[in-house]
Image 1: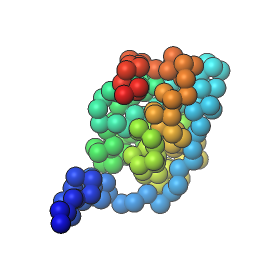
Image 2 (image 1 turned 90 degrees about the vertical axis):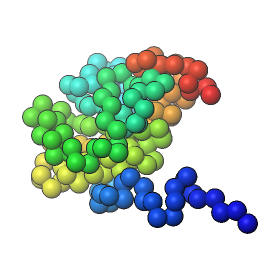
Image 3 (image 1 turned 45 degrees about the horizontal axis):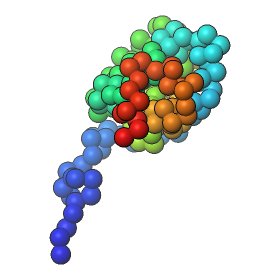
Image 4 (image 1 turned 120 degrees about the horizontal axis):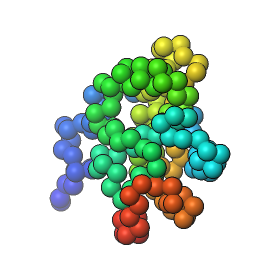
Length: 157
């Protein structure tokens, strides 16, 4: 009988996020329809909200317009600095996403929400984009038109 390790990891190797505490806070979601509406209302990424693409592959296939790339694997130690920057800029909402926003996106949004609570700051929200970038691209042209570097062939594969 052949034993196949799960997720290509040995039984003793832990996932990258095991080095950090689990998030206590369940982050609020934002739907792609609500984010699309923000763009239509003229809200601007970097001023009215911050979009954080947590994928490690530097926007492979494209990213939602105005997103910054902060790979989830190196995010946790930077949370205090990011908080200081976002708070000083008075940006009200930080939106985190990855491929599906079921792993990295939710984890990062939770960590950041925990930090916001520790700072007792009611002015800043940590949100997770429902469906992640995959949900965004699958929703059609009105969504992909709002992407930087969109590569249709990447998403159709």
